[in-house]
Length: 124
Image (cartoon, one colour):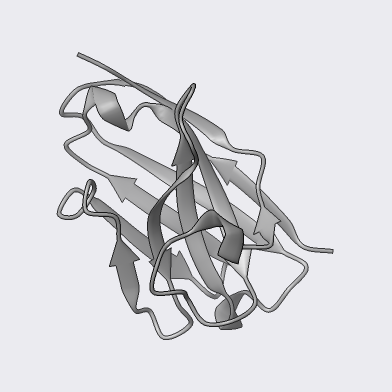
């Protein structure tokens, strides 16, 4: 069965960096659309970044130029490099998978499979 396990979250000061990882299993990782989402307390889940099977990426405006999504098909692992972190980046970060091509809008309802999340806390 599909399994997604995130890691790499933690606490960091504003301006710092973190790299999240998502280990995937149970499906053909290289042919799926993979995404990162985040949810802060009291807020809706929002799309952060997606990457398709060809390596094409799409980002939320709020993270463009600071975050980079990538994947290693040999390791079945998705990454999110987060630089220049801001307090408003504080949230639970989730990895997600979609069997079809990546949607033009990074909307959580388009993704069927989810990890359990990893917490990122950025202090000012």
